[in-house]
Each structure stands twice: as structure tokens, then as C-alpha cells.
Length: 398
Ligand SMILES: *[C@@H]1O[C@H](CO)[C@@H](O)[C@H](O)[C@H]1NC(C)=O
Ligand SMILES: *[C@@H]1O[C@H](CO)[C@@H](O)[C@H](O)[C@H]1NC(C)=O
Ligand SMILES: *[C@@H]1O[C@H](CO)[C@@H](O)[C@H](O)[C@H]1NC(C)=O
Image (cartoon, rainbow, N blue to C red; front, side, top):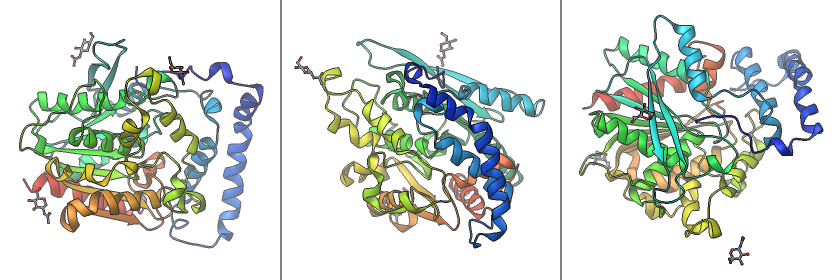
């Protein structure tokens, strides 16, 4: 099940790990207190212009994200479905739970571990125009509530303009164990898109969104469509001549291997949350290869680490999707890889009309979503309006 407890590391959890987690009860309040007291004295910049409550939340995430994998396995963990149901409960009776349970099986014919994923609908299931969102979480953590809040806000804003959009968030398998290894998420993502098509959605009325690891998954899916993964997994055969209306990648995690090779942002952007290097290594190291499979790692790595895929693999993307928007924060650790990814894989093939890169002043990783962790609307976040406008433009130009 998606987001099920991560048992792989339990046996390796030491007393030091437990102590570190226990110390969070002191470290978190202390960090927030020190930040609050010192904040009037730090030099002001675009990031520090954000409301204090937002910056305090960012500090909280920073502390949590410094935990090791073994330590984070000790934190209470809910599945994506639980997170969604909890959110719906708080919005009842305005919203009701709408969930599609999608069954998938990886490796037909082989060992056949079967695992399901869910489409979690924000608002009514509306299939004329649909956003399919793959949420982030380093392939380790399930979707969080701020994502649903963001989309509900967007949906109501679009409704005010007379635009009705169905929004489906995919809860896919995460964790540090082999059962969460590539290509399970890609199989689930393929299943989700095919499911929308089977419901009668038109490809040209679907826009695909991915943030962080979800952006990585969108890239996997596009590459799988353009250049199928050499594994016995279901292909993504799209209706001939039809294209996805749009793809939006927010802070996409396109570089899992040694991000420093693309620039220094990964080391120098201290306001950002730590996007753990070890998480990328775990995902890459779990890719079945060599003796586990007939396919070598070098054949699969370009999908999981899409910045390292040959540029030519991207050249046919304009036959699969009309337009692509990529955004990153100027204060984000992933800034350099995202910029390189756009410059080498997207811009050359989509040009300036259909390919757009936005670098947000003062923004950090997944910045537009983070506002919704502490508020019900964007906190002076100009990027949010741009994203909503770009998506709406895609839907209304039909
Ligand atoms: C997935 O399997 C469950 C249980 O077997 C079934 O109830 C459900 O309808 C299946 N979902 C789809 C989309 O086929
Ligand atoms: C792979 O299999 C070969 C032959 O069975 C064996 O000699 C080798 O040690 C194995 N390699 C690993 C990494 O398990
Ligand atoms: C942008 O995309 C549309 C639809 O795919 C295409 O017709 C158009 O030629 C593209 N524009 C440029 C400048 O590539």
C-alpha cells in the first residue's frame, strides 16, 4: 500500500537514533525560539520578507529533514490515503472523499508483486478538464495536507473565472525498501494516466503536474512514453496524434546523483530545506539491476535521474505534450540542476513559446505549497498566481 510503514530500517535503528528523535522535542522549540528572537537582526532579503509563521514552518521542516533515514523511520507515518481522508474530514460537509483504487502489477509473468495506488480527488470528480498531480516527498514520504489545500484554493479561484477543473492527486508507493524501488512509481503513474483516458478524459484536456520527487516521476513518465523503459512493464501508448495539454514541474528533483556537478546551489542556499543527498542514493541504489535483472543500471539510470538522460531522448517530447512550465526558487538548493535541466532538455525542443522557466525571487523548494502548511491562501507568493494563470490559459485555449 502506498505510504505503508517503512520497515526496512527497523533492525538498524540504534539507541543514538532514538535519542536523536527524542531530542526533537527540545530541538524544534529551541530552533524556532532562536530563529524568532534573532529574526529582527538578520539582514533583510526577499526570503526574509516572507511572514514569520511561514519561515518558522520552513525551520521546522529543516530540522526534520536533517534526520537520517533510520531516524525518520521512527516518526509517525500516515499513508497518503490517511492524510487525504483526514483533510476531507476537516472540510466536511463541503467536500466528500472521492478515491479511485488502482490495481497494478509490476513485472507481469515474473514474481509479480502486486501493489495498488490511489487517485485522490480534490473536489468533485470532474473529467472535462483534469489535472493529474504526482506529489513530492523524496520517494520516502507520502503526500502532505498542504498539497490538497493548495489545489482546493486553486480550484475555487478557477471556478470564480468560470473554469471547472477536476484535480486528481496520485498516492504512489514510497519508502526506503526494495518494495518501493524504481520502477513501481512509474508503473503506477502510467496506470493513473491510462485510467483517466479510460474514463473518457481527452489527453488534450489533461495537464500533468509534479513537484520535487513528483517532478522526477513526471520526467520518468514522459521519457517512458518517448523512449520506453527496457523492462517488462506496461508501456504508455498514447492515442495517435494526441498530446497532453501541459506539464508543470515545480522544483523538480531531476538530479539524484551528485547534484553538486551542476553548480553550487546545493551547498550554498541555507534558507532552503535540506533535500537529503542520501535519499537520492537510496532510490538509485535500490534500482534492480545486474544479477537481480537482465537490464543494467546504466540503461535504467536515465529514467530515475532524468538530467543524465541523453538530450535526444527529449527531442520527441513536443509530440507528447504541448507546453511545459518549470519553476524553482532562487534560494533553493536544487536551483542549479533545475536550471540546467530546463536549458538542456526542455528549452531546445519547446522554444520560448511552449517552454517556460520561472525562477522565483526569495523562493525555496516547493515554495508555493509551503504557504499552505500555515495558511489557506498564498502568503504574498507571486509565483502561485503565475502557476494558476499558466494552467488556466492551457485549459481555456481549447
Ligand atoms: C482494484 O481491486 C479492488 C479489489 O480487488 C477492486 O474493488 C477495485 O474495483 C479495483 N480497481 C479498479 C480500478 O479496477
Ligand atoms: C552475480 O552473479 C555471478 C554469477 O552467478 C556471481 O559470480 C557474482 O558474484 C554476482 N554478483 C553480485 C554482485 O551478486
Ligand atoms: C507550440 O506548440 C504548439 C502545439 O503543440 C505548436 O503548434 C506550435 O508550433 C509550438 N510553437 C513553437 C514556437 O514551437
